[in-house]
Length: 242
Image (cartoon, rainbow, N blue to C red):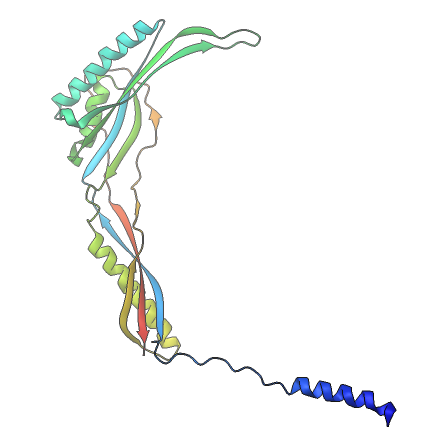
């Protein structure tokens, strides 16, 4: 009997381990509603009602005084021409003024100054979008020889919001309805709505470039198109499932 005792004890121990009860999963709280949350996206297109462009005059001379004097004269002529064409004082703002030495670099020697370059830029803003091309042409004709592009803007961020948010909600509802149907359910009332961050995409505009042209008495209007601005909206909606 003694030699069978260890085997008997091992079997008994193993049986006691397998006899432990298996934990049951906690039941779902019947008081909490079953829901589905989805995100929706919508867009709206609005027409810009403002424009901004920056133009300037670049001059080069042997001395700083000469370069600044020539630049001042030409910039004054540009500003006067813009005002005569209808731009108001508050529409014109000096946005940059630089003086750069023109240097000759040779290996093994200190740089030698050959002259000085002066650049003065002015930014023009206006709510008369139709005047953008005409004012650009006037500036070029008065002596502008550098430009940093033109930008069209929507001054009121609320424009197009109703249309965009409605489209985003419709998109969320359509997604939720499709998922609910796939699960053999249907949508109930809305429980929660959260608005996402509004995004905007600017229409194309000319990239920065130097025009490198001599001032002339008159210049044709610059052909520009304001296009439309696309605004994107996002919402997250939670529906009750039925």
